[in-house]
Amino acid sequence: MSITGTTGTSITSSEVERAEARTAHNYHPLPVVLANGEGAWMTDVDGKRFLDLLAGYSALNFGHSHPRLLAVAHDQLDKLTLTSRAFIHDTFADFTAALGDLCGKDLVLPMNTGAEAVETAIKVSRKWGYEVKGVPADQARIIVASGNFHGRTTTIVGFSDDPDARDGFGPFTPGFDTVPYGDLAALEAAITPNTVAVLIEPVQGEGGVIIPPEGYLRGVREICTNEFVLFAADEIQAGLGRTGRTFACDHEGVVPDLYVLGKALGGGIVPVSAVVGDRDVLGVLKPGQHGSTFGGNPLACAVGLEVVRMLATGELQARAAELGEILRGRLEALVGKGVVDFRIRGLWAGIDIDPALATGREVCERLMERGVLAKDTHGSTIRLAPPLVITDEDLHWGVDQLAAVLG
View 1 (cartoon, helix red, strand yellow):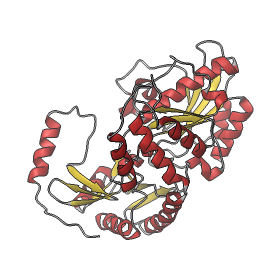
View 2 (view 1 turned 30 degrees about the vertical axis):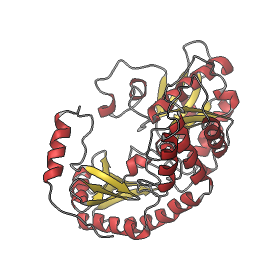
View 3 (view 1 turned 90 degrees about the vertical axis):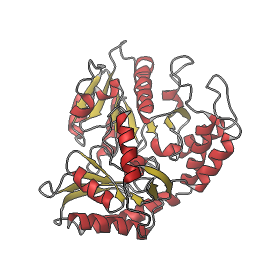
View 4 (view 1 turned 45 degrees about the horizontal axis):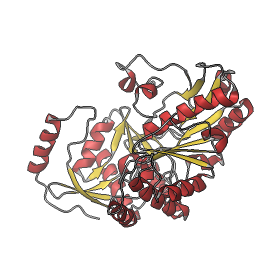
């Protein structure tokens, strides 16, 4: 698909300046100002079209303005948008039942953002540790992995080893032990009688799409079962079709005790997250011990329910797997031609650019000039995570632009 529209930047430049003038600089966005989106494409305020190869960090797995998702959102907007959890609304039960069935779990605790869902999993794990496992009060410990990214709240950044996320925000919440990602021996050695959970990403997205060694997730499951420890899988970026399966844990046939979900669950329309588990784990929470005014609101449940229905057919997961093989083949051809290495699972790739050629940021800036939007991470790595609805033709075109930039 060709790029159309004007090439002038006067409106874009003005909007960039206005945004930077009145916004706290917690992000370093590319200098593009987007106004419309459909499928895998977005259009800026100057009318230039861009192929979206980031998909909102997987929040837009189903693309921009998906007609099914827009239809249920519009319908719900005309009826009821918020009640708070003080009352029950008529989309709540359908959403929680459908999401629980998708996960094969008893209970669903809806929240809003991914970080909220991770915080919820931490609270639930500690509560379970005290009430079920019998850990002494205030002694619960949770094992996490190096290179993790679970959000940016103060508790979460306290167990990050990314200095940009962590430095300057202490003091931090105690109770976390970090082990190398992918190292089962280190994980097993770190477990103590007070360990209540292992919290990991089955694929580390922000780290550059880091895929653990084969058998790692099965090993985590086995260790957690043997040691009476919860396995909490942060599937916020990796889950809901991105890796070619419903969940990234499915690649090893593993079922965690807690699924931590977000991003794509809201269909790119509203923030929706959830922690999903069985009654013997999530059932430890009682009224007044955790909550969210907007969590599980009618609009969120209507959109989330349609997301679950779309995933229930398996078509999008199969599409991600198929397109992922196409992307793999294209990236293999670029190794040694500006690409040092890459990692891919489903339609999700981390690409290490030769640092002698350019930084990841510079590559993304050059891609933007050619009508492609992607995101860098950790210096010379860029991530590609197109909407799962992208066409074969557009995917090839996007990689063509990467090859041209690297050439």
